[in-house]
Image (spheres, rainbow, N blue to C red):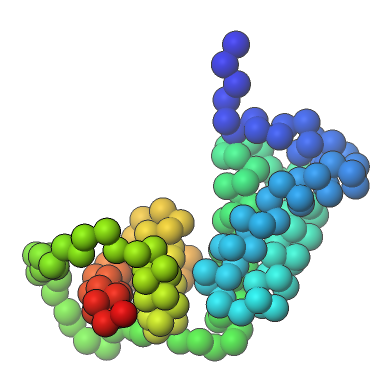
Length: 180
């Protein structure tokens, strides 16, 4: 019998739904590092990432009855962490670089000079040096796998703004990496 991935850690989730603190702690231990890394990618501040992750776990355990195995527990928790990270940035009033006031038309993608075997540290450094709005788009699209419709919903922007911001962010990232 094949086990479906959505039911990974099902016994821990079900026991946690019943209020079993040991199972909750085990789920926490399984996912805390990955969720912290997501928080750090978005927030860039250790303390903020830790706060968001703790709040996310608290909310997840309070709302565990809403988890219906439509995805894995990890994917469900990841969505909570991403949303809390974005909300945290909104509270801090870190603006996205919006272009709603201007009309831009996307053209065919410019062919960038291929960089042979780009050092992963250069890419990480480049992402960290991006303006906050660009960094959010890059994180959501490239690292978290959101599409532009999902990004527009999460960030409260239009799909076309998401697309244009992504193209601009990618161009800026290539420029930054080439200077490193």
